[in-house]
Structures are given as structure tokens and as C-alpha cells.
Image (cartoon, rainbow, N blue to C red; front, side):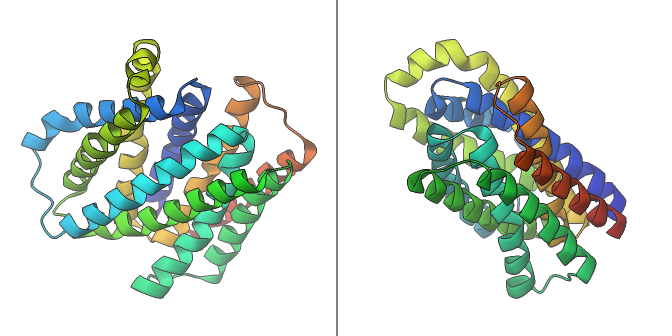
Length: 276
């Protein structure tokens, strides 16, 4: 099951990078986020009639909703003030370290020396990529808040998906709650501008909404199968894919420092996969 969880989390990381690249490429990022969450809720809605209610997981879902809401605000703000190859690495590099601390200290999940080494290598590589570019204090603060929120909702959802009667039940309801609540909030926040942006961005929003279900659904299934600290760190290999997308499609520059960071992430991933 550990190998299966590793494969699922790697595919999740790849898909997650694509979703963030779509959001970054859009001109109106607040409206883009509203479209992504709204479409994801609409797409999973039919499944709500076929999965059991997430008994024993309602409190986790409520906590997840709050953590995701703050995360998305911080993510949008960080993307507005810096490149994808800067904001994304800082946020994702901080997250696995905080996730491991929370999972081990609060919920007593197991962790080995090899996992600690792998987490350290990935976090160092990701942060090295982010540190390779000058960053304003405001942008740095938003990126760090994003990483803290990622750690919070990762630990919360890892516990929630295990408390629910099935992974499908938790996945469906987490997207229903996020899409109907947070998606509507961002649309209201944008005001009339949302409708103008929606007419231009609804196609990439639909694609990203579907991919959001895939990326986080796979991650939640993996968390149900394996230990949170190792899998949360392994998911940060998404930065390798995000860097490639940013360079090839968004025409952002790849420096030697960023390339070295990608190498460190790859080494950490090998350690974590070998541990499975």
C-alpha cells in the first residue's frame, strides 16, 4: 500500500502543478479561483447522491474549509506579487516541514530518520528555488502564510479522510463545501468583474476544476493508505513539474540555483520512495 500511495501522490503532484499554472496564467486570479472551485463543486455534485455521508468527519470538513479559505487568499496574493517559480516553491517548501511536525507532535504519526532526511532534502531544494530570486517582504509573507495553511489543511484532511466511512465520501464533500462556499466568496469578492472574467476564463477554469478533483482526490486516497509526513513531502515534487511548466509555457527564467533546487528535490523524492 505504501508504493501505491507513493504513485498516487506523485500523480497528484504533477496535476497540482498544472492547476496552479492555469491559475497563474489567468489575468484575473480571484475570478479564476472562483471558477476552479465552483466547477469542481458542480462536477462532484452528482456523486453526492451515491456516496455515504461523511459521518464522524464533519468537524474535520469544517476545519478544512477554514484552512483552505485562508490558503486560497494567501495563494492569490502571492501569485499577484511574484513569479510562479518563486511564490510556489516557498509555499510548498515550508509546508512539508510544518506538516510533519503537526502530524507527529499532535497526532503521533510515525516518522523515521530516512523520512526526515527526505523531507529535509525536498524542503531545502524548494526553498532554495524560492531564495534564488529577490522577493519583497509582502510577497514573502503571503508565500509563507500559504505554506502554513497548506500544512494545516493537509494534516486536517489526512485525519478527516480516515474518519469518514470512505475516501470517496470525504472527497465529494470537501469539494462541495469548498466550491459552494469559497468559490462563491471569491466571486462575490470580485463583484461585477467576475462575470467579465468568467466569459473569458471559463474554459481553463473548467479544466482546472476537474484537475483539482483529481489532484486532491488522489492525495486524500494516498493519505488514507500511508503516513502523512512522508506523503506530504513527496507531493512537493510538484515543484519540479511547476518549474518545467513555468519555463516552457510561462516563459519564466530557470537559473542555476533553481536547477540545483530541483536536483535536491529529486534526491529527496528518491529517498522517500525508497523508504516505501
